[in-house]
Length: 223
Length: 223
DNA sequence: GGATTTAGTGGACGATTGTCCATTTTTAAT
DNA sequence: ATTAAAAATGGACAATCGTCCACTAAATCC
Image (cartoon, rainbow over all chains, first blue to last red; front, side, top):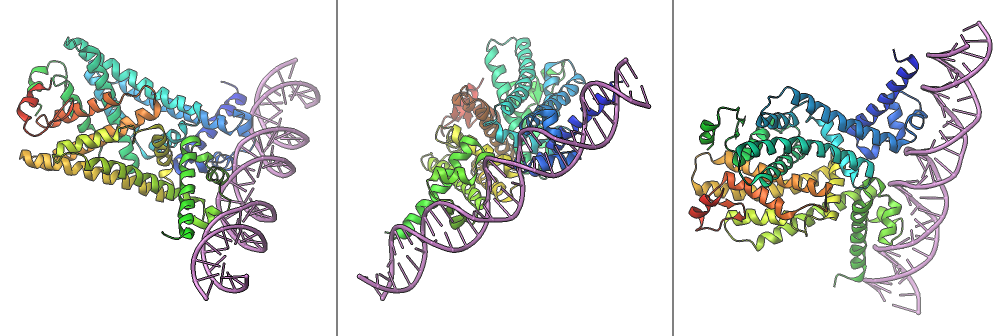
């Protein structure tokens, strides 16, 4: 037991963070006021100052929480992926496009914070951290693919593949933001794998990653 | 002459719109208040209500103006492009990544509005319109490429290419938003052309569009 | 169970928000 | 030069913002 004291304390902190994220998702940052937050959390006005020292710090904590949540979800998915780098890339791509990660709530929150990131240093940092960790995971996988293939153009291809994959995922998120109803997850994944198949025909096809041992056939199969 | 009356009137309207965009670019939407706007424009408090009927309408007009400006710039570039669809695509890609279009100011403004788009219908519309017109221009070009190539899989390839190109451009903009200093326009263009070369090897290479008459050689040159 | 400590409350506060209008200034028409 | 019309001003206004603190409620300790 952590003691009812501290238990409640933490519970209320989380309630405040959750209320901020709900409000940002539904009403946007500019309409997320202290009154709005405490009403959603069902707590009293003073709690924000008590637990976070002010509204700005609370919003920052909410951005941090959202960022962590995204990465944790993605990393959990990665645990279930196979060992081969192409399988890991596929898992990241499909995970980033999955309902659990790419949904109206998350997209609203993410773009709302992004819009303010340029002027709020602290928030920009979390936005950057999330992207940085994702970039690291993807780059590792491509670096392994390039290394195992033994081609000389090592660093360039892996970097381009990382850059392109991230850009495509970003673009798909924007697509979802603007048209959540007509967004097609399968189509989005197919387009990304088309790009990857072009760069690593022995490792990817239009359908996704090629498991080790299928290289020869798959390289031809790609149209 | 439009009469000094109306001339001043229009001049002040533009000053207000410009002040909003400057403020949004520098301070963000949440800090763009009426006081901030009129101070930048050097006009009196009442002007906003007089010319636009309220702050919301002014912000909306500013979003509209920014959207038009972007598209006009891109269309002007298109006038100077060659007739072949691959040259038009190259011009759009290079134009969208050019300093005139992709710079700190425009990116700040664009993402600030995007962040609020979900909750401000009118702004979302302009965001959508801009993307829609761009989508149309790109799709037209790819549709021509597919048609001229005479492959049967017509609609699918053109749609995928359009979708992928737009997503990549979007991703590059986000890249610039987060890291304006270390952004490399050439690298961004190269990655997009890598994608296009994969889809249309007879029409694109890593360096960009292939002019008509070079098809045979270029298709092999791609590594 | 009384004392002590900490969590939680909610209203007061000054600052700032956007709107609106009575007034002044400027341009155009006579 | 005088009048009519429109543009522009800037302060008054209520509403809302976020902060803070005197206070109450509740959990922990002895």
